[in-house]
Length: 334
Image (tube, rainbow, N blue to C red; front, side, top):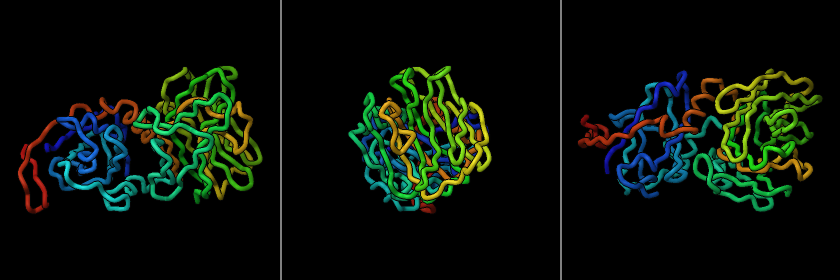
C-alpha cells in the first residue's frame, strides 16, 4: 500500500513543542478506505526518509495519536502501512504507552481504559453511555437529567498537585442548569480541585482549588447547547488559569492550603457526593491529567490540532519508493 505524507499548517503551531502528542484522523489518510487492520499495520515517521519512527496509538480508524520529540511549524508526518503487520504491543517502544509517557492519566472515552498504562481505569457509575459520538472518535454521554451518572477512578493518582494540567472536550445539553461539574480531583481529607459550569450572571466555566479557602473565577463564556468546546485548567503552585478553545480566560491565585495528596479522579461531578442537580448534563471527550503545567503555546497547538484536524494537516500526498536495505524498509523516491 502507498506511503502517505502531510505537513502541519505553520499557522497552527505557535512554537516548538517537546514530546507533543497529536491527533490524526486516519480516515482521511488513506488513498483508499482503511480498515482497522490497515491502521494497526501503520508505522509513523517524522519525515519521508522513514528513518525516525514515532510512537503511536490506534484508538480507531477515525482516531489515532502520535508523539513528536520536537513538534514545530514545519513538522511532517509520513505514514507507511501494508495491512499485514500487527499492531504494536501497548508497552512496545513505539506502542501506546510511549505516546502518553508524560501524562498521569488519559481517557479517550470510547471505553474506560487509561491509555498511559498507569492503570487508572475508570468505573462506570449508573450507566454512562460510552463510545457515543465525540469530538475525537468516541465520548462519554452523561445524558441523565439529575441522576448520579459519573465515571470514577478510585486509585491514588500518585500526584501531589504542586503543578498540573487538566483538559477535556465538553458538550452541554442544558446551559441554563446551575453548577454542573465535569471533573474533580479529590484527596482523602476532602481537599479538592474541580471545574463546574455556572449560569449565574452569564454562562461560564468556573474553577476552584479548595483547601482552607475556595477561590473561583469566571474563566470562559459564550457557551451554547450541543457545541463541543475545549476546556483546560492549569496550576503552577501559585496561579491557576482557565482556557477555552485554546485561549486564556483569566487567572487567579488561590488562598489557604492548596496541597492535595492521595488524589482520585472523577468525571461527571465536581464533588465526591453532590446533589443530583450538580451532575454533568452533556458529553465529555478526551480527558487528560498531567502533573506539569502546560504553557499557552502548547494549549493553543493542541486545540488547533483537535478542533480542525483536516486543516491542521492539510492535504495528504501519496509517495512511492524503493526498498533501502540500510534501514530495512522502503526509502522514498520523491
